[in-house]
Length: 508
Image (cartoon, rainbow, N blue to C red; front, side, top):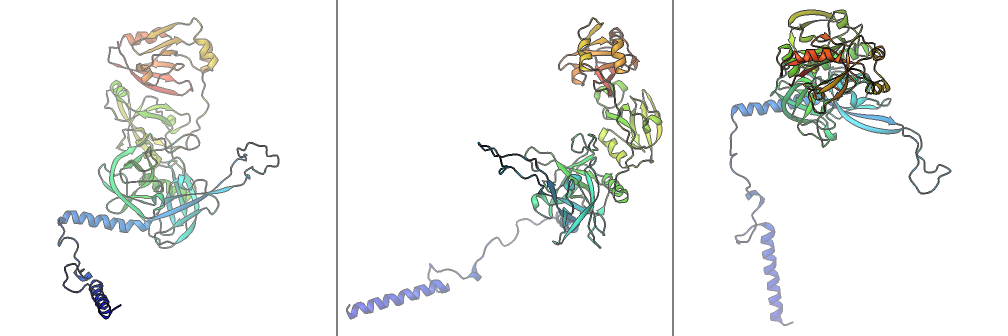
């Protein structure tokens, strides 16, 4: 390489080094240089909107409630021992030595949910389905600050899906108990829990409905359940069960229990157990280990449009007594099938689940005052609530008796204005059913009036408009005296032996 070439290469190297230094330091005035970090400016100079004082106050309230109540809600992990049945794997060869059988031993399974601290010394309110069938020492509680403690089950109530557990504690962050009696549709609420294992999650919404029932979520071993839910659109997901529903004052007004969904996750329909009911159950469980719930001892149903028309009431006004159980508080107080309960202790009732919710807060021996409507007359009845009566056995016709009844020559009448056909009861039928009167439903027109109101073949019509009937002709005579569009009231004994009142509109 010549001396000239050497100097050229050296000059290029020096020039490259200088340019590189400019890039590395970000200095210099070259148009392609990079600015230093102190000169970078991102975003606008000011927010585009200034929140009004009212909006900012509401935001501050949301933050304050969330901060206050979150430590009061715990994360519950439950271990259950599941004993599988012994079975073989599906291989295409024999296994004479049992090498491929699953051992018949318990397998621990874990689930999770939430709970609310309701006393400084460690009582926690949660759902029964969260802790049900937990193994010994299988309930683990994790607090907001990460501490963990084993809890013991104090008591549970499948009828309301509530349970109380206990940890050893002192000075724990305790929820302020509000009241659900003043809950209103549109009220702002906060759901706090641990959905999908995401601890200390707060969601916000409104109360969408109150007194929601007939969801068939809570059932005990006999199929009985009490459902009087607060419905909310605050997002509730698996793991929220047992968590708290709070109002804007940070008061606990409900225990989150369930969601209505076809995906398994929140679709805006969450349900919470009213705190007034939850507190009544919790006190019983803590004091006695079981619920000492008082009962009226009646079967009830809503006053629908046809029943309301028959009684000259408004739809949704009161709850119909559809049957009275033997040896119950209702029987002692001489309540009758067909009575309508308008009020409980001065509070109006308009649905069966609302009535259940009010009575479920009472204990055995408590007195309640019911306002009763009985065929045009209104009066008060004072009841002393009793323990839940046994259901008892009821008589019914055997399948062969019902079939033989459709083959003989007994008197039959087609009541086309009601959409059903009835036949007389034979002496044998009356002995089997332990009845003195009535006519048996021999056929029902599909989607006719009787069918739509739940009347089925094999039911027995005992009375029409409070008049006992003994023959199809007697039924027909009563119906003939009723104008089209009017309503008749039938007392019916179902095929399972239970009695019920059904209102049918006459269509001539």
